[in-house]
Image (cartoon, rainbow over all chains, first blue to last red; front, side):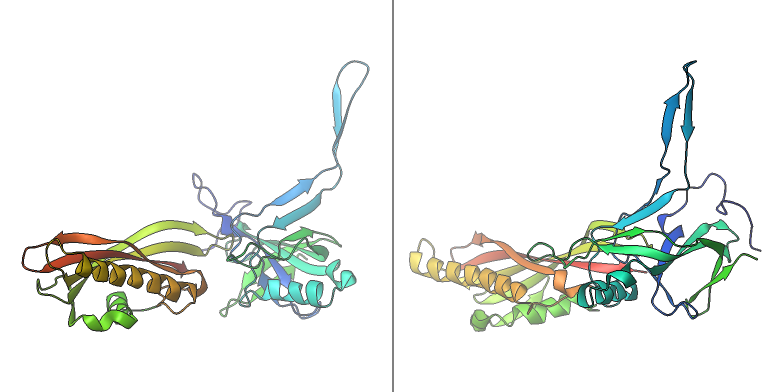
Length: 175
Length: 147
């Protein structure tokens, strides 16, 4: 029986890293195909910049203002692997085509598998995410790596995700 | 992934171009007669394990083997000792070359990252009956992926 809560893992247990996955749309906007970002990447985090500003009033009290966050995430190093359809798509758009406009408007879905219903967890779609390739290379004898830096953007749509029998991810916007 | 690493290694070492001086290769023992060899499996050692952010586990393992070669060597005689040393070091260089060129056997899921090393070739024992036992340590490092 699925459970529904903000964090859906048992109390007293920490959450595994793989419960937070960003998926790149390698299909179209209307018929998305969601492929996970981060194969072979060992450490990557969403970074929240709240644009915070603090000031003190004449009584010495501190007041802080926050804005809606700019969310970024880097994947570094990110070894190239043709089995990784997400990095393959980025390689095509960034390296082969050098299509800056397409790179600045990529469709990314973040699924929080550890939040919400266990079978239909919380997800958020950023349809105009900037995917910046910061370098391409690596040391001799090592792996060819193409680190990425994402800036999540566009009109954020929240909803739920589900995984089909074949592993395909489906996003359902909240009503 | 190879299902039988011992047999794979056995077939591989026998491809050494100067292997033909040996008359037999046995497992876990070697006859104390000239020109016999034994391959001794030393089991597997887990070197490291880590996960990527998608939850896939990458485990680096190492298979260890020891090759014992019983070669002809008269006591206190340089010529035979020199020939044997050349054979042992030649074997080590051959293994290194095969590994660097990607011609060595592979055991894991990321063949390009695998290494096979033949190290510490040295005389292990000698007797008065005209033989000496040489040993070379072989180690194969490979990665296994668990989804």
